[in-house]
Length: 425
Image 1 (tube, rainbow, N blue to C red):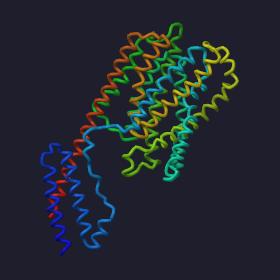
Image 2 (cartoon, helix red, strand yellow):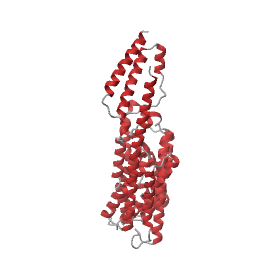
Image 3 (cartoon, rainbow, N blue to C red):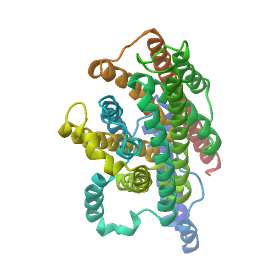
Image 4 (cartoon, rainbow, N blue to C red):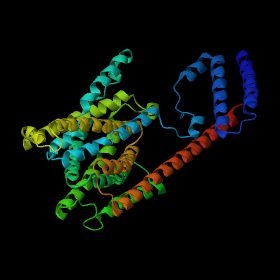
């Protein structure tokens, strides 16, 4: 009897407090948040004042979905996503230095493929520091599960093949042309994400995919469109097809990494909505890089690249010392790019990673014209405009989609709160 009186008094106080807080609030999301908080406090009071049997019921885990919060009104990427995007932009020098290697006499394809993967030892010190600082929480909780390590190794070997095909295309094409062709990986990423991840197309994302596919196709108008002087048409078109194949393979790897993280990682339940520690991102990239490097080393051994490197360095167009500097800094730049892509996949989605690769397109165009003095003709300009148009369309559609999802979540939260009030005596 005494507990019933306490419950009634608590209910009256909660109603008075609710009315005083809601009065003057104009935001539906804020009102919903206040109501949910008051209901939570009231239920805690009821549980504390109830009988022992009711307290045991209150201690049982809740199966209801988590309540919505006012933070859903605006989409704000996490700091890890922003940091990963910055790493992708810092890695823009990777394609440029790879083209420098080919322009000044480099011809070893497996070596150039290994440059795109061999920077993974740079991740070992930060991984060790991260694990050492988190040792009190249990190092085993931060290490990748064995099945995820195996999946990452397989994907790393597959990515090494993609890098080799990309090196084939980069050898025959100017950097600006190969960059535009590589931008088609967004279309392949969207298609494979639809098949493997369950991505839903919106009118804006479909428009972006179409534009980013048509843009590079403009380069095929005429046999001399983007073809360097003195290069055979057959060599140019072979490199053209190889660059498209590399884009398709890269577009396949990105969704598969997301699938592997979702299936074999620990991001399940409510933790799936929280970005994982960046140590997880670095471990994934290190495993993929190590597996891909082994594949490239095997290819180099078969093709005799180790014996050919000293001769190639001696005849390099800008000197022997610069030959090794180009290799080292190219590996570092590609590692920044790959780490940023892995961070976007792990903390956001594979489609966002593909979008950031497409963002590198204008930067690669500018760098190629400035440092390599490549020709920027009409077809390249049209392809660049269409690609930027597609990228802008995707960004606008993504923002509109996030806003629509936030509004739906707010409406569902308000509806659930109204249902709770209707059943409260």
